[in-house]
Length: 398
Image (cartoon, rainbow, N blue to C red; front, top):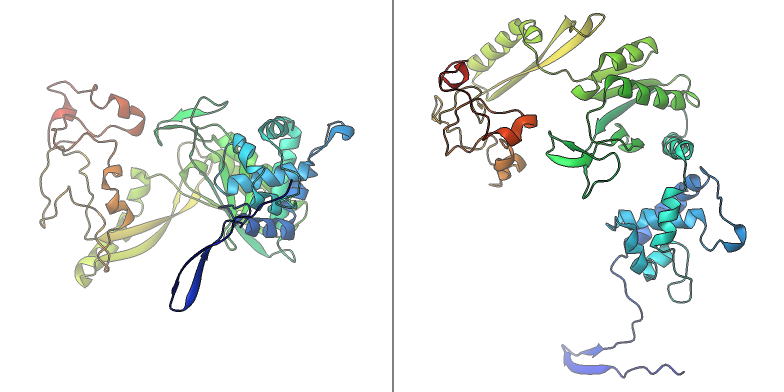
């Protein structure tokens, strides 16, 4: 067959410049940015490193796509927003993706399809999956030219919403979603990922947190013997098992603590001084810190606690125990946004989404007969009402 090219269309000239429309541009793509990912992969060698983590158990005589090529295609597709494996049924012939995977856009063979990727994702065993996680840790350590003096690692979990009933997906009342809660660990100084662990959609227990920290530190110590390691996390990771393990193994930690009255009483003197300073200076916000020793009931020893204290003219958006809508002293309406507009006139992010600040409360147009319900009882907010003469129903008490 002969390829017939359509003649170009000529349009009237503009400013003595010729305007022509041609239709022989070849195959097009809308994902040209995948080439930047390909450059990063070639420089770091992530796909090759992951491919070496588990053996290829396929028949060598029937192999068309190598493990590295399949991992590379899957990673590139997810990075470009194509999360489902069946998206590769069309992307496998995309010229940009073929170029990124080292194949010619026209004459090169197509990439792997969805069934091939599904077999790949189900092939690794539990030990293979652990080696894949360790490969990311090794990749992070390889980014340093020499052993650092100290590293600060931020550990936190993130809500990964699912759209079905996948294995280990659970309903989380805090996020009000059916989700996974994978644990992410990042290098604070360089903003580099260190490790990611896919896990069920529930808050990690102290034993689980301790196990993750132990495995991660053990892997780091295999290469870095003298590096000082510091973990930072929120209250989910302030578990007695995790803190005790860190203290016994020479690992520093900075974990958030939930507010408690015994702990607040220990810093009352410093808080009064900060409130007095704000009142005398007239500043809108005055911040300070206080240090004390604290021992919770579940702890086996006292530990150092640092309180961050802030005194400001801003008041809470919602009352804690008073359920009728009443303006606060100073003329501030409780229905107004907590965050004011910036100098450029644009509202802050929390003020733009004001409805999400009190999603666990009943609407203000209804008189709330009881205190705001906790997140895990949100679905019963309209059904659970205190008795008429109960203590919680008395306005202004509590």
